[in-house]
Image (tube, rainbow over all chains, first blue to last red; front, side):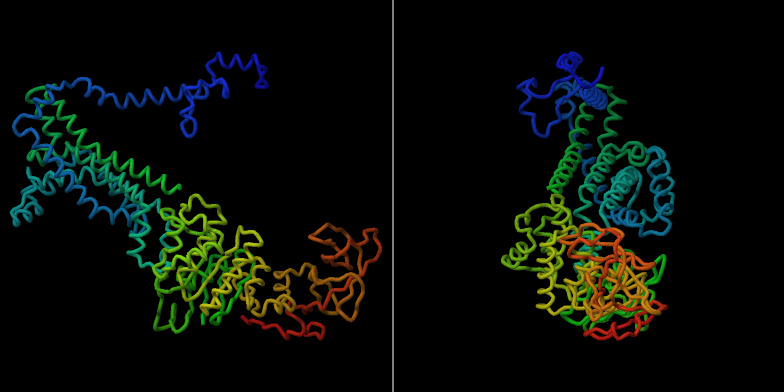
Length: 299
Length: 337
């Protein structure tokens, strides 16, 4: 059967689930006209349905969390004495971690993106190595690196500091777990800024620092925000390295783990919700903001 | 005064040039694609380091490869370079792009006057992604003009613009250069653009500066056969022991021995061109192309035309000394390597 269709063939198409564009479109869909993708054909329906299934499957754990929580369990867990201390610990250490990443890793990412470093492959391999190490292994190795009987540990001791079971240890563990994600994301963000634009700003009389502030940073900002929010999610959820070198002070992931060990599954769930609610707003805000920045640029 | 005497290594050849542009003067750098024109501008702007060279602008030395070695960074040079890629900042509106340079603090009326000459007054609040190629180019030109640099280097600034806008912009840029009394260089591979813009024309090919002179003088009295080819001489016919260069637009039908070289041949092909006709005329071994007001006879009969005061070239390719080659403008200025 060819596409040179008679009205009968068109009707056959409709039977197969194809929608005929034009006057036969249901009137209720009019409000989606302009911008919204419309369900035009069977293949569109199938692909949207497939995407929906994958999306729901990815969301499955969250759905399970929400369906297995009861208000009384949430209230009981969160009103227990000291129940919100781990939340404060997680948020504080997470914010400090973000600060460290911003100050220490942003210049590295910029130099990687602009090829300012000799033997760039060596540098990138190093970043990838730290990405590939499982968090638990990072924790073990951190003991050998900053533990009390190491040179670094002894140096810290001189300042009455310790990187074992302290807030400092927690931050160190979170930095190591999240840094590679931030470096790689920020590198991609800087690489997306065309060097010609920076050159152009220089030709218009801007010294390099002003070029960075007026051109490079604004153009890389959406990507940097996404990288930072991924790093934030890693830091908030950091567990493997944390359980080895920073069992105390206890953040939310360890609180979930110990509650699970001590009182069982149902009482651990409210803390999972807390982790989700606390960790989500920053990535969400970054996502919305970078999408708006992209829209603004397109005019 | 902009002085640049540089040698720059490129992959295939070395670009060698000595350019001197007086304040308020407009020099057109004309040559085929890949001749090294853009490279020269990038060297002056400090984007490409020369192997050897001395560049000065006014009383400031921008680049010097002999002690004391000087290599000012692009942002220190106050050299305005308009590149073929407009390079608008995508996160800034057209207005913010125009006012980007710190030296640009236009009053509202100055900004709107410039925007209206450039034909972008309705686009001031638009984002660059919304602009067409020609509009983006005009915004980039406006941004450069507002930046008030000490010299203007324009690399093919009229790409993608229609003829009337070209004329408007040429006039605008020309008057700004005169007002500010700054040296300016225009790079182009279109001879009409170069002639419309320039006080002086420099012909460059394969990295070598072949001839510098008044535009008309260069076109009427090319210093060499290569220059003649570049400025539009399409046919070369032997005349005695020399070759006469025939420019299609400097041919008139009929035999007028007192006005130049009379050529007699057979029309091999002809086609409409503009308001007249373009014909290929076979003269002995050579074929010349000429623009004629009327359609020439194509029946195979002999047809005589006069090449008006053609330039002659010796066997070495350089302009030959000949009474008929000496026009009212005098001898061309030959640049020796």
